[in-house]
Image 1 (cartoon, rainbow, N blue to C red):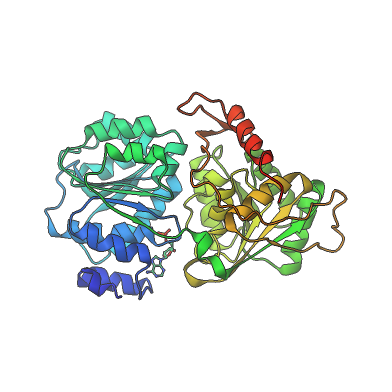
Image 2 (image 1 turned 180 degrees about the vertical axis):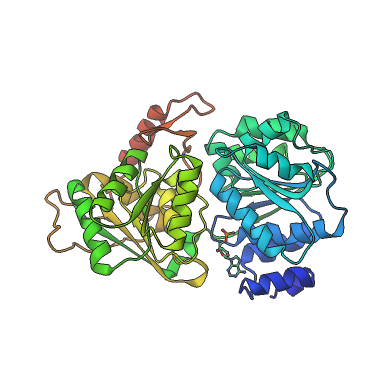
Length: 434
Ligand code: AMP
């Protein structure tokens, strides 16, 4: 299968070749023809599958055929949950559309609104936006939707997790009824299907394997270690292996700040990114990391979601995530598009339950390696593989990330997060011992 056989025209094919891609990924093979036919699409695909090009390439093809956007109008709207993802999607649009006379721009909060209003004044063919800032712009008459042809919701599950449902509903009410709709999400929970009902019309559904089934290029291993020894152990691993670029995950924002400061005092250039950092600080940290002036980027799960950092060789789980699927998302940051990588997790005895859940999800026992001088006093129990399939339905994800990284918000049943956690741990401990 080649890109040319998918129905894309030469200006786009040339831009794709310039990116160095010769074969479409599975999501691209499925999504591109359906979108070109004008169908609505519901696609289950995570970051790392090539989903961005999967919708961007056919969008560019369709939009290149029509009239340019009049003043303040938008022909295609792409909504994303985070500012970083919005910026990355717009970068892809610019790259793939470089041989076309189409205009695109990106708007998100945390930066001045005036320059964004100026850019919208001339009309744009593709607007990439986060929901809150888009509504601000609409309320200030900077953007009009009466000419909108296509709506894309990217990472729809994250948008719900991050509490954007009301903003999304407000935006949907502003759009013309007749339009093409593309909905991308890592998973299709009941909540997403409910949302989709009001958006897509007779969609083509498609799904590609998540990273955990295709990540043979990622070497995964764990270092059992006492909690207090994690920071010195990480310093040793960075120095002894001479890691030049690593993305390190912590569970909490405070933990991310503390670790980045610790590494700095050890002479390792580091920065933390999380929801409490200003947009400027986040953009700067990401740019410095990409440029190589920062070696270690310490991030929380939500902040790291959707970051496209090419060919990252090293991911470190400083803490294991509470939600096992987040482990798969995290290690999906490395070994992308055929590049090899390694993911190491520093695991203390109190994280055994999370480790067991992860091993059950990925159906694999992770290799253990104790680093000399870091033998844990509190030893990590041996794992046994639980071969019962993980329940398909994901546990509810956080609505908001708090200062301490705990989750808040209530789900539809009105359960508090603590009651959800309690029921999760009950169901874990109720599992028969193997
Ligand atoms: P995404 O899932 O959109 O975040 O894309 C993941 C990564 O795969 C990005 O770094 C893309 O540049 C890369 N990519 C997208 N399509 C292809 C392809 N057909 N061949 C190789 N790499 C690709």
